[in-house]
Length: 309
Image (cartoon, rainbow, N blue to C red; front, top):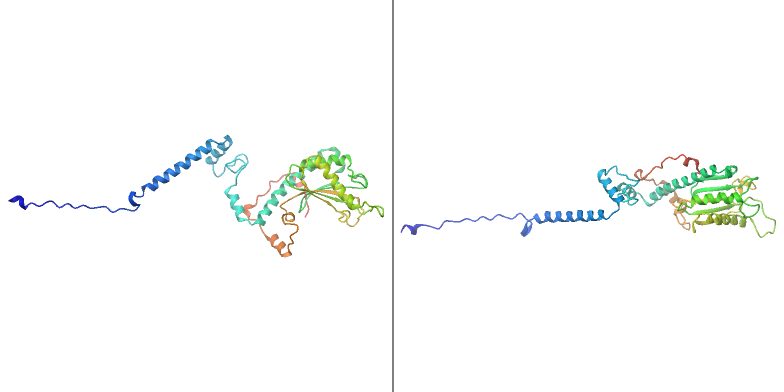
C-alpha cells in the first residue's frame, strides 16, 4: 500500500549554549547591586532626617557647590567637625617632626594675638601709662614671655620682700584674665639684682626670687588662672641678670610670666632625654610640605608683639 512507504518527519532540536552566570545567569548581580545602593540611600535619608537644621543646611550647601563650600568658617559637612581631604592628605605627607612644627606655628599665632591684646589693654588703662617702659611682651622659643622690669623709681614689690604693690595686683589680674582663656601651661620666673642680704642672713636672693614667683602665682590664680595652669615656678636669684654688665642694675629685678608653646622644640622632647648635636641638626633641616603650610592672617596688633630670636 502507498501508506507503507510514508516515513515520519525528522525533527532537529538545537540547544543554545549558556553564557556564564550559572543556572540563573548574571542578571541577579545587577539587581542585587541596585538593591544595596537603594538601601544605602535609604539609611542616609533616615540619618539626615534625624539631624539638626544646621547639619541639613550644611549638607545642602555642600551638594550645591562641593568645591567652594565653606559655611560658617567650617570646611566640613558637620559643624566644627572633621577634616577636608586636602588636610588629611597633607598630614599624611608629614613626619611627626613636621607636624609638630606646623602646630608650633599655629599656637605661636594664638600667643601673639594674646600678647597683642594684653598690650592693647595696658595702653587703654591710664593706671599703667607710667609702666609702659617696664613691661616687655615678647615671643621666645619657649612661648609668650611677659616681663615686669623694675627701675630705680618704680618697683612691683615692696623693697626686699615678696609683697605685691596695689598697681602690681591690678596688672597681674589683667594678665591672668587674658591668659586664662588659653589652654597653655604657665611658667613664672623670678630674678633679683646682685645686692645681697647681710652676712649670715638666713633669707637670701634665692628665697626672694622664689617667694615673688609664688606671690604672683597666688594672685593670678585668685584672678582667673585655672587650678593647674601654672606648671612651674623658677627662682634664679641673681644668676641670670638682664644687664650682665651691671649686676646691680634695677632692671635685673624682674618676674617673667611665660605662656608656654607646648609644641616648641624646647618643650616637645622629654627633658630627661639627651639629644645629640647630630639629632638637632637633622631636626632643624626638616621642612614642612608646602601643602600643609597655612599662612597666618595679617593682624595689625600682632605686629606689636616682639619676637626674640
